[in-house]
Length: 151
Length: 267
Image 1 (cartoon, each protein chain N blue to C red):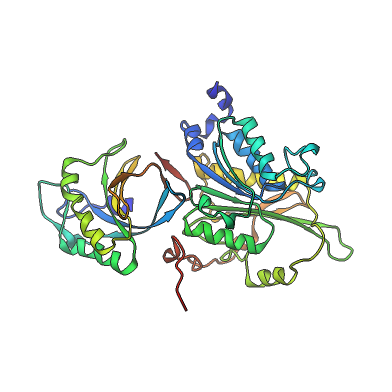
Image 2: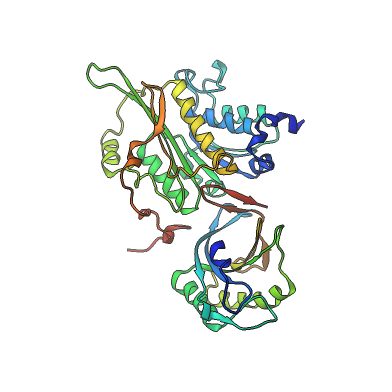
C-alpha cells in the first residue's frame, strides 16, 4: 500500500487508493475492522487539478464501489501525508473525501467504510460503521513480520 | 522505578515498553508451556492478557507448571497463571476464561498475538483457522516424547509462526489430513503422555523470543517462515528441515476471502 502511494504520478502531486475491509465483533463495545485488500488506482483515474494533491475521477470511484458490491467489503479511502507525526485530515481532505462515504454506504449499507490516513510514521483511521456516525479508531495494528501498533 | 525495572532490556528499542503495553496477547492452554509464556511475558512488561484453559491443576502437573504450588492442586490453571502475572505486573489486565476458547471466541479476536499451547492437531487446526480469520499471528508450541521398540525415548518439539498472508501449518506439512485422521482414530486413548519442564521452557522461551522480535524488530530478522524444530535428545533448536524443501508460493488454505466472520449458507 505504502509503496503504491509513494509512486510518482505524471500529473497529480500524490496518489490515493482504496483499502477494503470486513467487520468483526469482539464485544458490545469493541469492533474490529479487518483490512484484507487494496485497490491501486491506474494513472488514468486522476484528474489534473493544481489546487489539490490528487483528485480522482468517477472511474476510480466506480471501481471502488463495484468492488464493495462484488466482494462485500467496506471501502476506505487511503492517502499519505508524507511527513512524520500523527496525521490529520486537512480541510481539503474533509471537503473532498468525506462526501464519498454516503456513496459507499449506498452500495454496502451493512459494511464499514471510512478513511485511512497515513504519515511517514503514523496512521489514523476514521470509520463509519453501519448505522453510526463518524468514529476514530482507538487502536490500529499492522500485522506482519514486524508488528506495529498505533493508538 | 519503571525505567529501572526495564533498564536491562532497553536495547530492544526506545519505545519498547509502550509497545509491550499496547499489545494484547492470548494464551490458550496454561499448563507446562503456557505457564512459562505467561510468566515471561509478564517479566517483559506485557500488560494485556486473555487466558483460556478449562482444566484444574492435578498433582501430576506440578512437575512442569511454572508457578504452581502444591496447595494449588484442584485450582484452575488460569487462576494460577493470573496470579503469576499479577505478582509481576500488578496493573496488568488479565481476562481469564475457564472454558475452551471455542466457547468464547470473541475475546480472541481483540488480541494481537495468540500463543497456542494445545495438545492436539484438531485444536491447532481450529485455533489457526480462527486466528487467520481475524488476521492474528498465531504461535504454536508443542512437544512430544515417544519410544519406539527398545530405542531410547525420543523428545521432539516445535515452534511455528502462522502469520496471516504467509505459510500456515498445513503449508508447512505440520497439520495434514493423515495426522488429523490418526489422532481422531486414537481419540479416547487412556493415559497421560510424558511431559517434563525443561523442553516446555525451551519451546516457550523460543516462542516468546519470536513474539518480542515481531513486536520490537530489535534483531531485524528476515528468516521467515519460522518453523523451529527441537530435538530434546541432542538438546538443539534448529530451523526445521521442511524449510529446506520447496514451499507453496503462497498459502492457498487461508485466502483473503476467508477473512472475517464465517458465513453460513442453507443447503
